[in-house]
Length: 133
Image 1 (cartoon, helix red, strand yellow):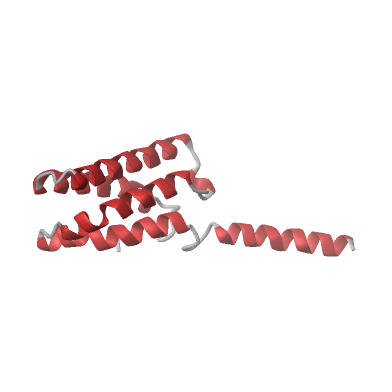
Image 2 (image 1 turned 90 degrees about the vertical axis):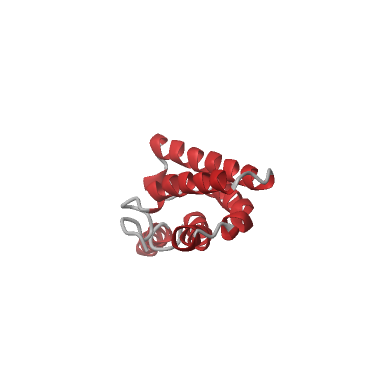
């Protein structure tokens, strides 16, 4: 019985660790997915339509990412400040789109948001982190 208890404990620990590896961090994966649909069109084609279409989703995903359960490497105070910054920048971008701000202001908002998000998305401990895809 004692061996069974130890085995169950080991398996639960392994599953818990595995849940924090790979692409298991849903909050980051969701934000990254929306950002991939939004930022490259601006850079490659100077196309702001995806930014305008996705601003509300980016804000929603930023809030979810900031408030959701994070892997251990992302629970430090310095990281919390980065998540807060991402959420603020996503809100600013969404507000600019709602207010029908100039294209230049929306571009600046998206570039600022992408820069802040890249610090987290490319963190060496992020799923797929350390490289830009």
